[in-house]
Image 1 (spheres, rainbow, N blue to C red):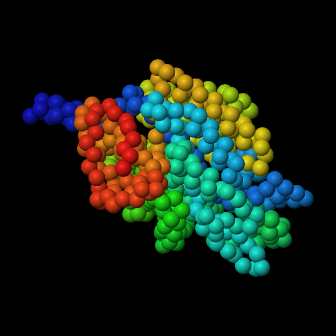
Image 2 (spheres, rainbow, N blue to C red):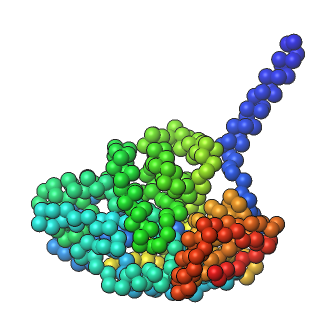
Length: 439
């Protein structure tokens, strides 16, 4: 009996250790080989945000340091809402670089859907495409539509406000200086960097109301539902994920960057974050967590060229590790009041895409989060691109792919050929094939 116990106890410890290791270091097995597929998704936050300033002269005669908004990179002081020329130039850079399947590089701009303005002692709400005073951008939405139809622009959801709107309403009028800044339509306010939209102090009912308004506005503006989400400033907790999931938002960006006040700080906080991330993957198999494993933020660096080369190396490391390469590149790189900043960002993106797409032996395919999540789960995917529906099978066998009828109808509508489609169309896909289905 004692001899049996001596054997059973170490064996139990070993089994528990193996299970624990699998939990901590393992993950959901992908249906496809990312080493072979070599996918790239380019995620970009803050689009549609009416801020930080409406134009380059916004701080004239103001000592901006008196505002005390909190720390952020210097280049952000003169960040602004994109205009039609900025979107157009970015789309042209993307269109110039094709993946090995013949489709251009695609940017996923994550949108902030609402903003506030103050005048005559009243706050006014502006939901896209409506914009506050000082941020009018003629032709902007035409440029966005051209990018969507050309397959280089694929909007997703970032935030309603990007800040706690109640805190802004209070702090932006707290004192003469803050009032003068607000009167110039500058988005920043005292303590704004800490006024997290998804802060744990906010009531879930208010957050749900904001989210529902944003989702409806997104669908009205872009003609489809949200398929992927990223929290502003990477701050969110479990109740936020549950809220997203209840609205069928189950593709979540930037999980590795997540900041959750419940985890605390220091070494113990980092350990809780690590365990929490893996627990969420295990506990919520219906959610797809995407990790940003490449950084392309050239306008915040002294040497933009070095940033590009590092991002290229990170891309190749991601593929070698069996992951899709998910590139982070914020709006600040492509939209700014200083034209030299925009020039630097566009040049860096052009260089990055030129190196990656120009590698004939290891050329990529450019995907969206929605496609990556589908491929991960089933090995097949669909995406509307203008008047076409892109269907993919990245497995070694034939697959049946259900395509929503409304997606086919949107594609047909983009071609001026409206049709009736069943709720879901089943399409048989041969192995290792990527092609366009023209409905």
